[in-house]
Image (tube, rainbow, N blue to C red; front, top):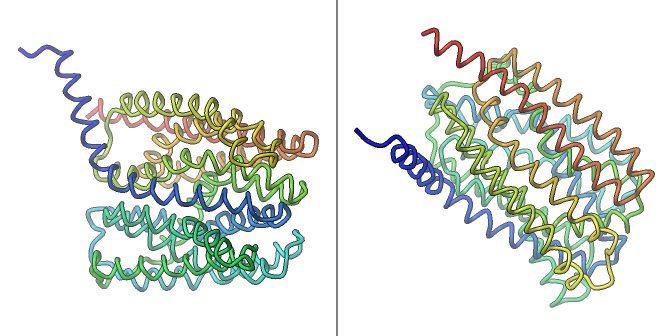
Length: 421
């Protein structure tokens, strides 16, 4: 009879090999594009006037946050439906076109609200509705590519617009007159359009079209997922949007210049979230202790390394600029660890929980994170950049705690059901 410890070790190794093989392609390509994003954005923050750098940080955050609102939770609906065994034979061009069409009204409302709330340059006001329309379509195409298990392509296309900000910096080096906020926004919008077209062409090859179309009833279910999706970006991009109203552009630029250096935490969660949901739908229930131990240990080690290494690198790179932002890097590293370790329970619960449980979960999650952001806003007013960093930690901790509580209750019910059978 085999030694139980040997069997356990073999299961660990087999599981690690499976997930390494599954994530190596998308993780590697996502890491490459994220490296370009980190380089391009940080170089732009170093060369642009601090006011323009603050406006760039705010517009990029608004684009990511509001595009997620405008798509109304449909990426999760598409992933759930198209990843299921009955997912074939669907009319994906119709589903994509209708989703983008429906998003036009939220885009118009969001743009009008932004104009009323923020003092943005005219170029930013022109840029915003176009980038929102493009990013909603890109999110939909990426969700379908994930459902088709084209994880590498989805990881690249989702990050390509931000990665091309490196091109905006290079253009400014070659032609100094292009070292401006307008050129950076133009590069970002152009690359987003290219990514959308590219994603649709890939879908045409990867996913045959059939007669089935998503009915209105199932589309409305996307509203339940909207809150869950938003909580992925509310602790960072949402709080940057709040801070854009409370802080001067120079202070916002200081925070963003430091936060961009910790983007690998967001990269890791984004890649894992894109893979875990369709895989957990296919695999069904299982044991998750190994996932938590492996991911938690890796995230904690990465957080400690970031807290020690990033501040001196940032001071060397930015020079005398952004000292206030660099000082909060260790706090942001804690937020990064919390951001990563939430992905397992949140992906499993979103993938397999019944609709009624999801509605309760999303409501609790949105209310919890919104309350944390409200407390955080008070901290921003009192402590400025330090308050913004602490607000990010509070929001991430709230998301982690709420997700874990709902997921553990779901697992207990599931395990009792399995035991009864």
